[in-house]
Image 1 (cartoon, rainbow, N blue to C red):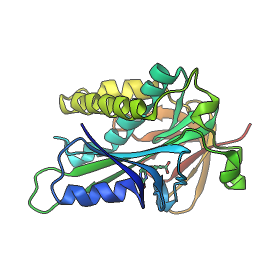
Image 2: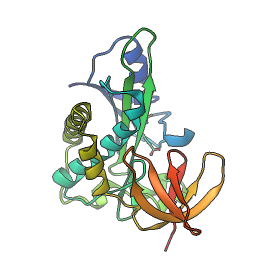
Image 3: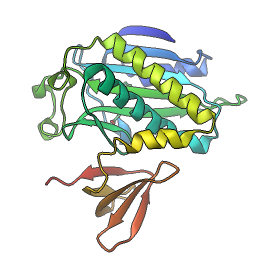
Image 4: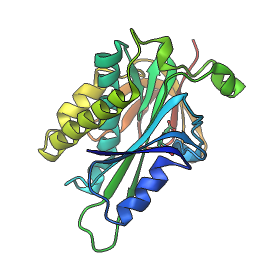
Length: 247
Ligand code: BTN
């Protein structure tokens, strides 16, 4: 693993996707102290002020069929949770596909982006991880203040950020290798252990802008999330956003 540490950049995902197209080696990691245009899922911004969080991206080109790529995103969520459990003594939960929650508030997120370079047999995958470590609440937008949290409010004792990066990348590497060996079921099993939506009431904002109210039924075998609406119809969620209903 080769970690490049930057003081500031626009987006570590953007930088690493560019490096990938220039042939950067697998398991190159770019970490930044701050991002000026951090990217979130669904075209959202990821707030990345200096000193308040951990912002990094990792590149690899898995020997997997592109249809298996959604499972990589799930594997990244598992890797982050397992490290937060082992190194920080916290009990994170995953909100599909891979928001990381502590005490029902979002502490981190993952954005997976790919770039297929013509003539290259394997797709380059960039997994970007953002974790609020000591984010001052006042920096968050008002609507986020009671939905987001920071790791330092939950950990048993301080954990070095470098350690979190290297442990998460090592964990992800093992999980990807597992998938490459045909053991995706083990990745799903470990994701399901931390499913924060199971049996909870939620709404699904579909990519077409419709809202479906339902109950979380858990992951299917290909990484889609199943939601049962009030009429008993089961929806297979592959994109869009799932939000827990406030109780
Ligand atoms: C989300 O929950 O919407 C995903 C957020 C992912 C943020 C990280 S921070 C490091 C990497 N670089 C980016 O521009 N985004 C990801």
